[in-house]
Image 1 (tube, rainbow, N blue to C red):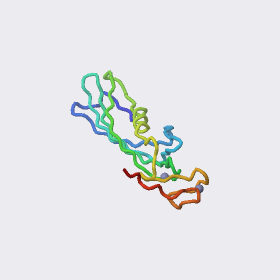
Image 2: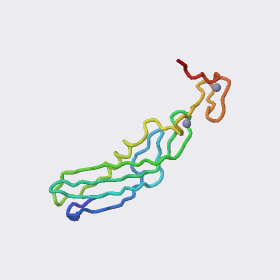
Image 3: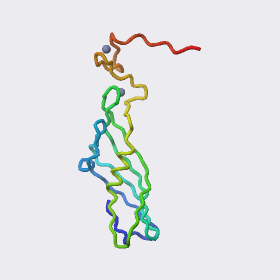
Image 4: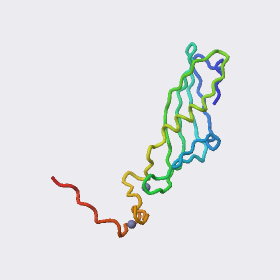
Length: 143
Ligand SMILES: [Zn+2]
Ligand SMILES: [Zn+2]
């Protein structure tokens, strides 16, 4: 999204933009973006400062960090971006939008909170079935 500073009215301006992540180098080994995502921006200008309040919703395709199963997830994040500007400037906020989305990725994606993962010996997905390597469940620790 490019913002021409001279066009921002005193009361601010609402803008909606759609980004195509396939051209923005945003994938991580366990995070893929395939569909366009939307950014809702409210732009205000106070003296020499341009403030952009953005709301981002981006559909992600994640791989579970334990069982490697793929699953969809939507990242939602808000950010307040600000720029020192001159009246004739055109500000491109695309790279900051990209950074905000990447910062909001889950550190370790999990397909479900209690994902059991894969057996380290045979690779069996333990959410689906148990295998010979798994001992019977340990009893909860009792005082
Ligand atoms: Zn999993
Ligand atoms: Zn096993």
